[in-house]
Amino acid sequence: MDTTSHNVAIQGIAGSFHDEAAAQYFSGGYQPIPCETFRDMFIVLKKRKVKYAVMAIENTVAGTILPNYALLRTSEMAIIGEIYLAIRQNLLCLPGQKLEQIREVHSHPMAIQQCQTYFEKHPHIRLVETSDTAASASWIAEQHKRGFGAIASKRAAHLFGLQVLAAGIETDKRNFTRFLVLHNRSEMNGTSAPPDKATLAFHVPHERGSLARVLTILAAEGCNLTKIQSLPVLGREWEYYMHVDLEFESAQHYHAALQAIAPHVHEMKILGEYPRGKKNV
Image (cartoon, rainbow, N blue to C red; front, side, top):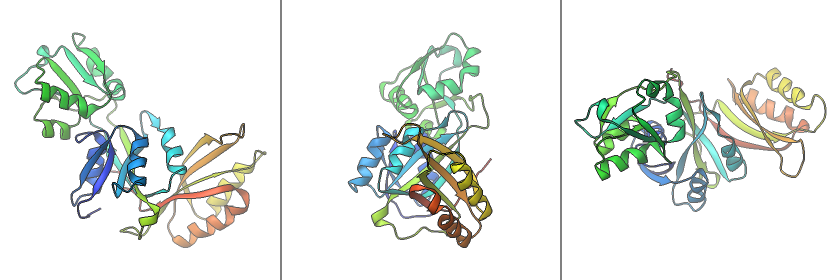
């Protein structure tokens, strides 16, 4: 998306993968507004301190970030776009050091998990869990911590003046994260391109065949179901919200599908209608 510069809420700080995803989407430039938690992102959006937010929703290794669906469903925010980002983990340190000089590496637990195979080959290095990949890199730079490393992005290395001691140390080379771009519904005036994807939330009666009936209708109306995720309906034991991603070739097919499933679902909410993100795999 080529836009003028906007304030955009991200989870983490500049140099994080959220920052990298936002920079990819807002190619015209943007100002990151760091948030400690995903909930904080929704708060600054609601207070209109920012116009947009970028939020991770699923990863090909770690799976779905379930609480983020609940945050989105209960908010007044809408999805207006998506980004698929290849996650490339790198070992960063202060310039001029060698691998044998690194005795401790800091990063987010997920990043450490994604690089376990690499560090098994270097047992002299102690791994320390922290709250954020980029924050670990920033700490090493600010405190001038020789002998310490961080697992983070190349963007973090560039921002904080660190050396990439080892690039692409993740075990799974097909590690991708899908991010959603969010905007306040009350300020929406359309997207830059016609939507061909939608995310819906609804729940169905707790009876045999109710979900299968809805899925059959969606397929019959020409919609391709690319994801389905369930979350419990609070206060209703054994009932679940279904969050589904649909791809469609025409708006006519999509709207016909919505009309056809309406009698068979409860509390349907359109979480967003947006152009599909490019899967640069």
